[in-house]
Amino acid sequence: MGATISFFVEQSIPGAEFNGDGKMLIECVDVLDGIASKSKLGPALSSFFCDPEAMAEDLPEGETIQEPWHDSQPALATVSGLLNALDAQDENALTVIDRGGAMDSLWRVLGIKRGEECQRAETVIQELKELERCLMLASGQASRFYLLVC
Image 1 (tube, one colour):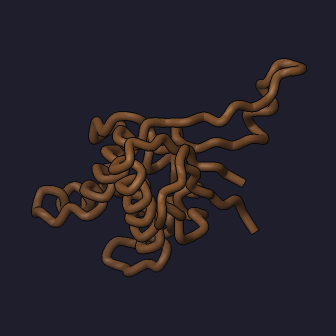
Image 2 (spheres, rainbow, N blue to C red):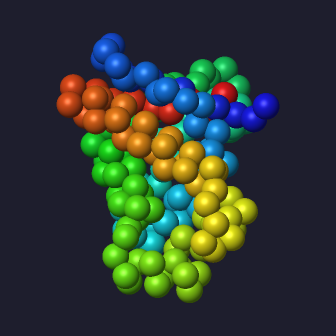
């Protein structure tokens, strides 16, 4: 079945529900973090994920897990920057992709051959766009958020 993500905001915001399961974001988060790092986008996408099982392993006895709220603006900048990097259409970006630049890792992870259309790559971009939409709503209300992995 695989893990999914849920988008939580600190205050109720109409329409700020993540429409999807986020499975491809979880599967590709290391590659997306690498692209974010290489593009100097700021916080890694994975830093906004909350995995209660992983958090519980490091929790001292008797303490409870706290909700890991994050400011939405830095996350929005990271997600928008990732979408820009993935959607780059200029000649230099296409050359870098063809020669195995930052995108080559993503294509290999997703099992995409150069020049081949792939549903999985489109899903990553769709999920990033959906996350961007939710973050725009949260940012507009100055609301903090976190992404729960379950």
